[in-house]
Image (cartoon, rainbow, N blue to C red; front, side, top):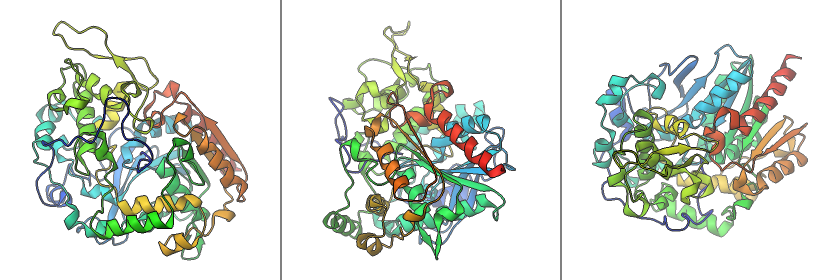
Length: 491
């Protein structure tokens, strides 16, 4: 979702940082193992369950990765008609997961006839224990009785959930871009259905980098772009896409050696999100975000269940509703960095009769849409465990060329000059223009027939994922691009 490692100061004025929350930790054991035994609620979800008309969340088998038994699969959230002639495969960014794209997917399939959207959950999602949020596929399918019976705050903040310890996850140090792209190829080939359907591959933030890397990748002599009819880049990419964020990629040989040495020494998880101040474990912040979304979705006007347990440095100093608590976690007005915030609204100026302040939507991204996405339970919005090796590989991929350093890491970026499919690129205020600049470079240095470049400076990095349909410039312009691709396929 975000493009975070060493790319900016973690927190702005007064919200600052790095506070460890003693109440979040979790018991020992494998997160995967419990969900596999129970058959529901964990990262695996319920294959084939429906979260609404035309929505399913299903597993796709992938190659062996050395993780726990049963982790050799990815999952795909499919939205839209299964007989669609074009499949749009979307890859979430850093710490992102498939539910990033559920609202986007609904908007796209409603706007563009003949497409289905597949949102990808990487194999890392098998390790998350989401059982504390109740069973079922997505918030849309969860009944009121299931909601009322769940107690996620106790399960997670009292440390009863199952976590993954770095010391027992050496395999995670080998889950880099090669592993990710091999897995993604299984998804793309399934979407192609033997060539009977077209595939447009895209992503958000580092998911855009991943999609472009796929297009340039050499799969046993076949260029990745040969599988595709188009590319869609949302606020990310290669060739300097993130330069405008103020913190360039860390891809010098010296930095790469240091980062690989740290991974070899056991630092297999990327710990960037711990800097938010919601806990010092790899999964702490992600759990807090989902908890805030879950309560805001199920009881938005109720007094916040979480407020008294929020670290003091991040706590609003008066009683607020569940919706307002979520707003204080995600809205740009609270000083959060661009890449983890949206333009949603503000705290109500006046308290209700019980002295509790609610949330006022006056931005492009209503807090209810954020809550619906964040709540899950499966799929989720935030990936619990992000491989530090994947961060290294994606940084090195920014040059988008078959360099000595790339080859030394096993990165087969051999086909960028040959790209011959159309490219869509969208940027927010996040990159100060470098996302589109980098996309233009990719087009100029390849055989891409045309590029479509769109900008909305009124958006922050996460707004394109959750903004109201009528305010979402990204989905509107992406739909126009997809209609062009679909139309070309019919000629």
